[in-house]
Image (cartoon, rainbow, N blue to C red; front, side):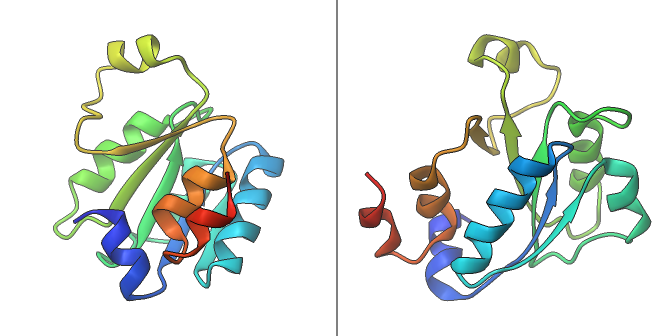
Length: 133
């Protein structure tokens, strides 16, 4: 189901798995301003300790995580009986992402540096997109 549908219907519980504290913190602040509940994890291992997310949740995962990689997290999430929504963040070039073994076609990819407009388009209320040029 497209994220634009979710943002109009209800708030989400969003898990952010990002090793760059500044990126995670700024994304969390914006998502909270949009009315979502957010929890940040500095790595996949910390995320796994919390147990699997609910099917109604969204997981925003950095592809370039140290240790257990973003690819591995995504494959694990896809293997759940009721997987959550998954969104990918990456600073990698489009070419490198396309070479990845991970099938990204069914996922939304947010490119770093993150733009407030891109975040608003996916997670903000309908009127928020107009506020960010």
